[in-house]
Length: 269
Ligand SMILES: [Fe+2]
Image (cartoon, rainbow, N blue to C red; front, side):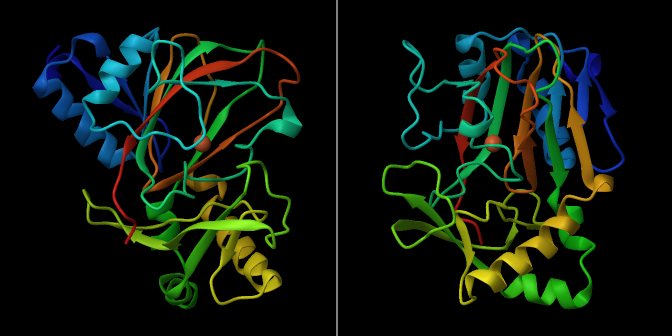
């Protein structure tokens, strides 16, 4: 499939684009170059009506680089590089806050791809926010502060959900709160807003929470966001180096399944 059959439709004035006129199973190198440029320009992309199974998702993902293996996640039978993201109930969800994927890894993934499998009757949207814009629009004072910050990321020994007590937690990574994107050269805020598992280095827990609340309110303001309402067959991909996302859990016990892959990134800096 060649680029001249494809068109880009921006989804908001700040983040996201839909690529129209494309079958991701049939892209050639020129088509892939077109998608890659659109991805770097828009932080996240939507492809409708692709209806990817695990094999198609894996083949498309491999075009982007080496597969990132999410620690402690178990892949599908026959496709260990593909994870099924299922409804674990609102209390059991670990993605209902603004975050960037696997930030607790020393070398976090550059990008993530989701392919819808089963959708609830309503709800289960995913929200995205542009973190280039978040950084570029900080006040000079907050930008200088953000530039100086480093965040420590913690996991419980069993990789379960931390509840704010970091005394028994393991610090698995420390990343700068502002990073330079290796491919675009642009600077972006880079922070996951899980107060139970993140602590700004050199600050008390209370100070860290306060600064993070200020940054989060700015970084996820509606003008920087796109909210995706899933339709069967959708494939989404986002750049973890310049966006944060939030999985809304408003669908109770309804079944919701997405297949997910992630691609290796670089050390944030
Ligand atoms: Fe996520």
